[in-house]
Image (cartoon, rainbow, N blue to C red; front, side, top):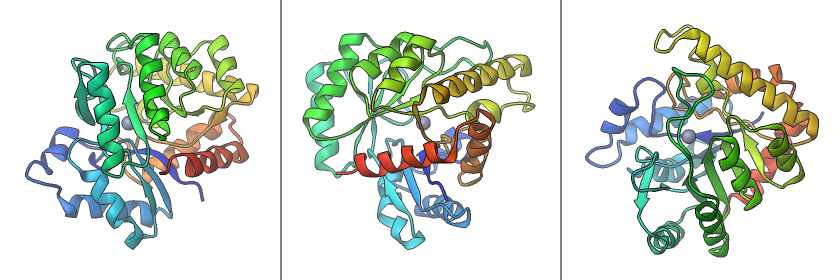
Length: 284
Ligand SMILES: [Zn+2]
């Protein structure tokens, strides 16, 4: 049974504002236990969280053994102030502040560092992002600083140029990775970077009515095509559903993601290899 390589235990797959508000006055243990149970019931024994700013994933890690789960967390994600990432982490203004956050995560027991270096998909307009990504220099500095501290890096990253910069800087795992072009997919395949394409938060929007279905389908088809191409090139592709994202419930989302990856023709052996790499690399 494959594990879940990208989840957010702080979210519930329904409404992130309500879900995050549960932890306003300290972590809500009941909510965390509910989601751990959902993974347990789905037969999932490995979960890598993408972090949150309220300590939910830290508590999940402490409780996970009771549910037979090997749980990995960056504690909080790190983003440049004024850019996307506030839901899942803490901001920095200067390189020095970024470095301090890396060292703080390490000191507090993070298994790895999670960075946010691009915007989100604009679901209403296929092929576009909510904002530009960080510069190649910023991305390189962020990845190298975490590596220097002895930690692996999981990067939220979309857009061809931003993804190329992250792969060049030897990011350990690239999350989402929308709009990578052939040359970047080729570089990815030559690298040691694991790609987690998170098809579920796109595909599960079909028919929900929040966004135009035509745009949702276009985004899904584009990402499926790129995953298929990357698999042909021999890239390391892993299973991560972004569990907790809108319409991606914990546990069920992992199964949904598996179905999408199969649709894109990714062999089980590739998914297992990617998970194994993550299990070895994304720990202290
Ligand atoms: Zn995420």
